Length: 292
Image (cartoon, rainbow, N blue to C red; front, side, top):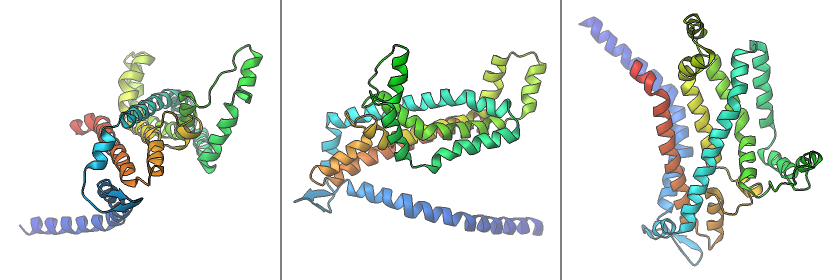
């Protein structure tokens, strides 16, 4: 009985110790995420009178924004572009990640990850303006295509330009996350599959992808979140017409200081990201949780 009591007391002490280390993270999330999010939800019910916000609890802003076709067009466009960006980045990054994880030494892999981090040393806005020059009809890319008898193509102010910007933002990060996920796979599983006579494709689909699924899904989720909330690429490379949801927020605030209506759009974006992130996490860890 005394041993049981000691174990219970020890467990309580360990729980308190763990809570102490988690407290800074909880405070950070409360101050910089939960608090602002709750304020944004509350602000979505405010009213604007004479270009000034007044505290209220009215559903006028929600009814106005949910009843506008412009909002739903922007919602579908943003969701579609983020989905295309997620699939594109995942597919393009995987061969490079696979090569870094299985075909190179640890030293080469470390240098490659370092070089993938280097682009983040430069402002994202500067990189987008670089693409603005490259994708212009009289830019270097169209000039190169002209030498082989192609073009000129209109790449600026198009959805293609927006996707290029999204890749600039997310592709290095995806390669890094995928490489880490693939490199951490137990190599004995792959060797066992080889010894059993499995083909390379069978090993990929039955061993590598299932083992690396959490990391691959998390990488894809990062792409979706960053693309869904990005303002710079659809504005400068996509032409902002039709607007994505981040651009719609800016346009809404400019029209009569309608911050409450902009808050409605922001809350819808957050709810969408919460739902997709929760579904992705459940999918990523479902088999591992059941196996345990």
